[in-house]
Length: 380
Image (cartoon, rainbow, N blue to C red):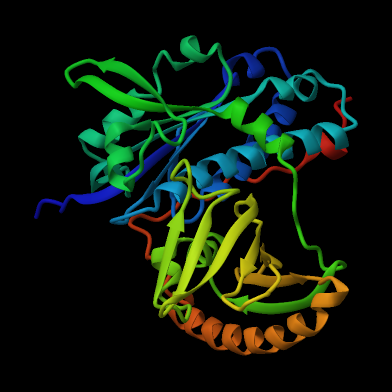
């Protein structure tokens, strides 16, 4: 029987500067560095993406799902890139090695290509691999002229097919139109994000986080599901409404992408609780202010943080900020009711997400471990 085509999202994360980095450096440290950084990026893309295969200096991942939220897709790719930059900064600061590989690790960077289409599974060399015209397209798009357009540096490009599949307005979200010509296939419309600019903006962002030390109250829950999956159900209105007691969730944003300034009207009959995002750091935490439909009610500020635990569970913390003295009695009253509502809702969320992780289309190859020698053992 012929394999059945399946709809899927494809992403290739490719290391820039790989060839020049390996030229004339100490290979043991170089390979450790590459393994460490690739591990960081691949883990950042999971879930919804799964690793299909390593391809030299690139990781090919896919998500066999009907729909990914447009804001979340961009957050996943950009958050994976930000984690790479933070990891690169950390190991450069921690390393005591002065070998050529460790000195040159700062020249490494990443580029991402995202596409949507169909795939089939086929047996090759004893294991299943992805195949099909769209698998070819995403690989061909790696060879492009984007670097010439932005003057080098990291970037993410999304095919127009991918943009349409996730249902976003690319121009409204600051993506730049780009075109590439592929033999036989012809013109392919793309949308470009300069990740170096995104990283600079991320570093300049003013953080608004209610820490454990500054919290008036902390509600804590453990959920046996991946962090990204929990984040999706906390933030994407269509998923959020499935477990949270509300009649409707109406999301509004100037650029139609979830982030600082986005408001959500949580409808309860004719009344609405209005939440505004004050800080947005996928997939670690977000901070919001909530205004209840009560005359004279103060805004309640809360950080919702998710932490990945070693056993595969996600630890969720809802940290409510300390009130002004005049608002203390009001907050004490609503926190008790909020805790009751949240505890019931989280039980419903658990039933929805725990044990519901999608089965892999193909078995994932193991990530190549790094021994961390670039941190602990300078080259003699």
